[in-house]
Length: 396
Image 1 (spheres, rainbow, N blue to C red):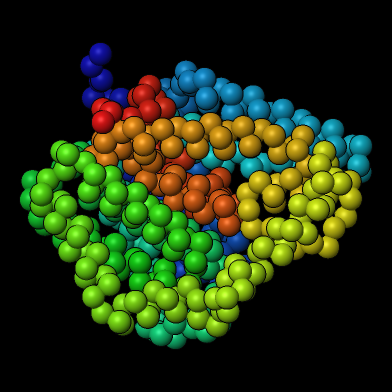
Image 2: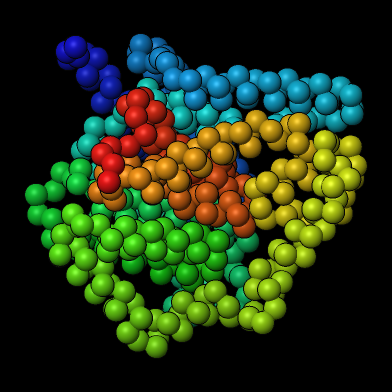
């Protein structure tokens, strides 16, 4: 069915608005150390996200014909209602909003499928923005190119998650066949440079969660490339050269090691995990006795456990957390199926984004649905692919 010029123009304007919103979500990180200004900028970001949804409705580009999205809407409504009931019973305000922002972005992505040119523009603009923000924060508040013995940015997990989004999208561009560049050598060189220029501030920030998630993603890419019978000799040679280059100098090895383990007792798992293990043990003991309602009914002095499941069970109990757990496994199962059954060059962009956030969720409590709008593009592209009516392309 052909699209009228007027409708095509409206679609282009909405796409441009979304690209602006995505880049704006990165640019506001320049003010991450100024709480008052940053809070105002975040409210503007939320307003813009809601605005784009209204624009889609007003321009008659809005529809929902997907069971997963409908299921998320129903579950979100039920958990909101359950939180309201809890608020009355326990005389406290309880709003369970874990799925709200991802759901909003999935709905936007479902109704706004970016043209290939705009997708490329979005990825490079977003990645260049994270590069600028990352280097600005590192050079202004850190020790330059030296690894700090102490974490110098309290919001390192938030900024690191955003940089991780850039790296995963750039890795997608390196691997996908769906490219608009005729000069593939230029594409590989330019994209690889952007990856390295984003990885360096990530490691200087010492956001170990995202660092580990990126390494997991790289390992999957390397294994799938080397085992693939259809991968080009050049692609395999390129990957081997990158690995050799990375580990060819003691400086690079020391940089990576210090980023992970500087001022850490590597013989003590609790020290390596930044006391996560001891908190997990305390939290699990608490959950055993407060499985249904968590801290809603019983106060606790335990630190927030950095694990998606343990954190939600401790804070909200199983009844209020069940909805987000269900959709965690829905998207995780799709992700695992894709990485193990689909050719590397046919994987969707959300597969690269979600492997980062789901890996991080093992040692961070707000991933993969947050924190805030850091996963904006991950869930937007999930919405894109749900509209296509398929999980991925050709299988191995």
